Image 1 (cartoon, rainbow, N blue to C red):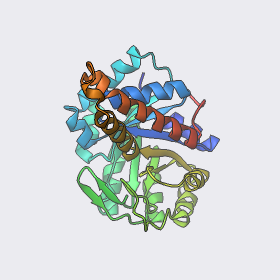
Image 2 (spheres, rainbow, N blue to C red; image 1 turned 90 degrees about the horizontal axis):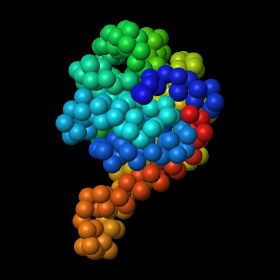
Image 3 (cartoon, helix red, strand yellow; image 1 turned 45 degrees about the vertical axis):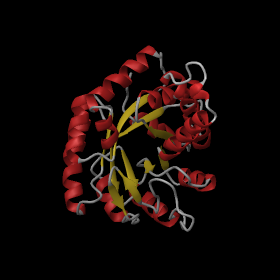
Image 4 (cartoon, one colour; image 1 turned 90 degrees about the vertical axis):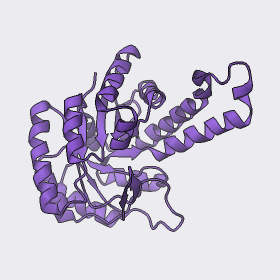
Length: 287
């Protein structure tokens, strides 16, 4: 059964750990992440970007697949199905499709418009029992064709959004989608601490979780981060394992070309990545 992310994130905030959001791109991704969360007895958030939703033919297909998979795999840990970096229109589509959590990314709007649109969604999500993530500041790198410069969030603007009653807040603190460049200066903990001071107990979200050093992850959690997003690392692990399988010619052995065999090494690589992150984030055994 899908649940709102509200309770799991409040528990994470109070327990000084973080829940991982692992983005899904197809059935293999979803199955690997759900099985690993169950194995680790960890709550989990399945993230779906607008592009991934379109690739999987639509948000209704995604919601149906996830709900059915939870039943068929007998998943008992808390699972939230979450729209990642949603447009205003996509938020309504996902609410209708049966998602249990949404993110409205209004960071590219003037703060007044971000507030206005977020306020509308807060009302609807509260009526329907869904969790809502908002964003202030820019996450660097590219996501679904949207390029962010990585500007740090204004703590006062974060407070304005938090005061609307959102469930969680993503604040830009120098984090980046995709691989981090060699000259990356690191997370701005000064900004994170200032945001935390303004928003109080609001669970904070760290996007761009791939490649951030472990000590920075742990420090971010100590400063109020209760949700950490991972996507690129799973993609890289899947690609490397699949490449190895093919380069070793295993797809030419017997029925090694069968997709169930061809995609198996990549799926196992995703599982291992998710295990590592769950242990790092501290959510193992917290379901």
